[in-house]
Image 1 (cartoon, rainbow, N blue to C red):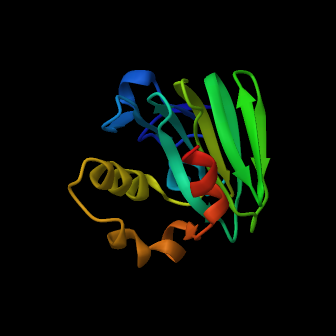
Image 2: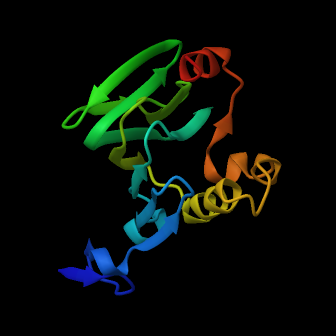
Length: 166
């Protein structure tokens, strides 16, 4: 059975116009597609567009979930554990639980990527908070107390800062 967002059948359908958009100052933004509550905890999904050279996520890891990234457009730089790699459109990255990672659009490139977290964690509140932080409406410290709630554990990895400031 198919259901639209808000219904209670077996399959979830989220139409483009139904997905909440959280703007980011570099012209990109989050498209909130499916939170864990809408998928019975199976997964959470979002689409992220990044302006030229913009950071997508600072270094972090997930204790309970794997994260899948599919690059729809552009080139994305990933820090995976302690190694940097670039992934172009059509490429896939799967990050296992516990692996430190970060990502952003490559220098001179915009990026568009689909991110799927499984098992799902209700993270729409996290993305909304990131949008407020990016627009200067809140501080990053406001998220530090919610790391367990969103299964996003922030890390200080100098390799990411060094790679992104070249």
